[in-house]
Length: 527
Image 1 (spheres, rainbow, N blue to C red):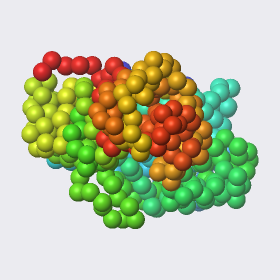
Image 2 (tube, rainbow, N blue to C red):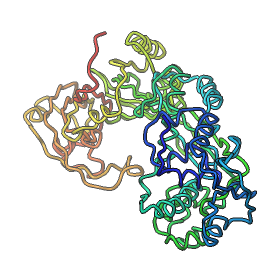
Image 3 (cartoon, helix red, strand yellow):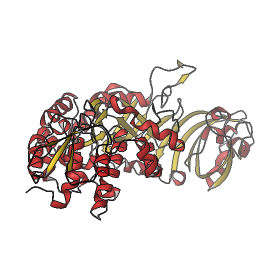
Image 4 (cartoon, rainbow, N blue to C red):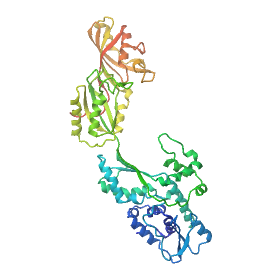
């Protein structure tokens, strides 16, 4: 059943004769069900022309640009002049014939978007590129970007159609028109799904984006710059100030009479269709989490590079991420963890939680066994680190790693040297201290990358083990974020109190190990 009604005929005549494609005519007539848009372009045009077959008292005003204008013999001279304002035409009696517009003509509103770019040939070409991209996906989201001048052309057509509706005492709001992107999705989504064999899902992490351009009409927007200059501000990451958002904003502000003076309504037909500026496939980031142990006292957590010079050949981050990049076929990664240890500090016990964001991965589906094998491969590649509980996690789950970090506790073991000889009874009193409050000014060694501040921290418990008259071991549980080395030696008085001041000696730390990071994430897995 044809979707237009008798009251639509005037608007349909007006648009078709000015060079508008049938699908855009449906949009401006408010056709909001999908089926008519999905018919082939030639069939739509034929059906529309049959619908518009008129009485024998009609004539056609033929003109090269726009191509065809319909008037009635009984219309006044003023009305005729209004309809032929874009060029001189000639009258010819043609009897019961509707405007005959070739389906090859480029639509003056969508610039061909709802014509050849909705056909199966174009869909097939896009799908071939998707399949050749090497991405693994089970659904996809289609993102299309249209030239901003389409908004200008649609606004012009709306003003003219609104005028036509007004003759019938009907109104047409801007929101009554079916959006171009909506109509495009109605037509193309089923075709893409059929061709690729996967559903279209707006929440999919795999995105196929198609960007259209139309150089021929790029200046359609420029007159808005002089009328609404505040809408067009230069931006560093934009090549042109005439972005779609800026154009839409200007169209919402411009007065109708100012627009009508500067732009033809309806818009003139173009010579060429849009072209595809770029077509890209991209997959949203996936996240891998786990816990790592670090057994080397000569390994930084992240690459140690100063003034462009690498100080050590590897890092915890690289020893883990290099394997993930290869297996997931990702472009890049971002590493994060629950705190960090110095290059000369080991991380023991159950390890330190970490997460890695893999950017634009081409492979994303892994079984638990494959992840376990990947963990084994990482562990076999180096004796400096070990990874456990490796697993895929969601972006939302990453918050657990940082959640309440200030309230978390960490346990350390340190070997301490004193300048003065000590006896076992000299250090025993430390065992009885609970929840010692200290204040730490930003340590000198990290001042280049941390803001200057005084941080209050709690030392929950301390446990000593005497070694000899100049050495003892100290096991302590502290609030997360405590600078342990400075707690021991005082950092020239920047940490108060400190172990040295409590013992009335000069103390220094020779070895430091992280024994536990009390963050219950990610979930522990069975070996």
